[in-house]
Image (cartoon, rainbow, N blue to C red; front, side):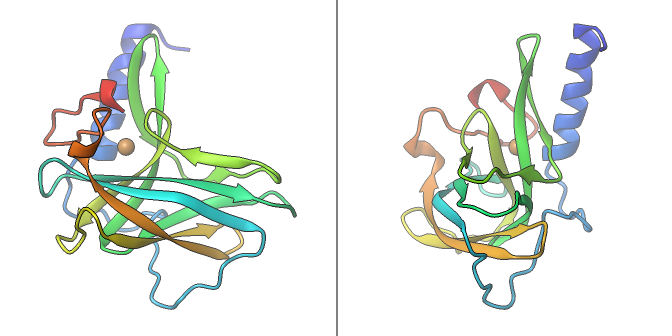
Length: 180
Ligand SMILES: [Cu+2]
């Protein structure tokens, strides 16, 4: 383990790398085209999906959802796609020595009989290149891809960030991690 100071600096570097507003960053495994209507994987459900729009247009949005695996062999979430966003990344918020930061995660293991919840302060999905067709009050579709290639889609409510004081303000480079 590195000392606290160094870990903090590393976290900031990771955070900026993971969440900066780069226009394009091709080749991310988390981005997945859903051109065809996916057939939902048996036994896995997506509920409570919400997309929270940024306070400033052009900033990343964030999505939350709950994924429940009923039975069968443990699967992993290998990618996420949100209709209307160019790219989606799975992130986790970690607090080390009192400093919160977030980092991209490649996949997330599910457990049979359990739910995995993406929520403020924990796992979340960062959305880049959000189209202005996504409006608060309407819905879009979120699709997760599992490690075996199966997909599960669900409608996602779209909210404005102003609707929740514990919002995820990703505007500009001034990432306020305390709000995640
Ligand atoms: Cu993030």
